[in-house]
Each structure stands twice: as structure tokens, then as C-alpha cells.
Length: 103
Image (cartoon, rainbow, N blue to C red):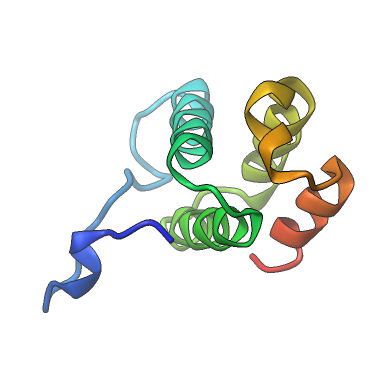
């Protein structure tokens, strides 16, 4: 799994901008895509990839970002980045369902 040093801090760390910030929607999508690519590059097991993605998406939802935008970005990523996801040997639909049902 991905180690995040802020998880062991004894105070709350805000890792993403809030949904009411004056940030364009495409910036959120780009941030999500960047994180999904990063996770693919540093995580070797599909179970760990799903766990890290779910944790990240939950933090975005807690910050007020719409679940629909998060999932549409994930769906787009899964359909376009076979080159990164093929190492997990998991069907696209199963990967999408495993993540979406846990956020």
C-alpha cells in the first residue's frame, strides 16, 4: 500500500482543495488523473491499487467534491489507460465496481 506520512501526524492535514474553492472543474479532473497514474506506477497489486484509490476518493468526497465527477473521471481513466492498468490483470468493469462500491 502507499505510505502517506500525514496519516501518522497527530493533527488533521488537508490534502485537497475544498469544493467551494474558485478552482475550475477541469483542475479537479486533472488532479484525479494524476493521482490515478501515480498509484499505477507505484503499486504492484490490484488490491492495493483499489484500496489506495478508495481512500483517496473518500478524502475528495469529504472535501465536498461530487461523487459523479470523481467516478466519471475514473471511468474515463480506466477506458483510456490500458497501458497502465494491464499489469493488474483485472477486467475494467470489475475494477470500476470494486472502487465505486466502496466510496
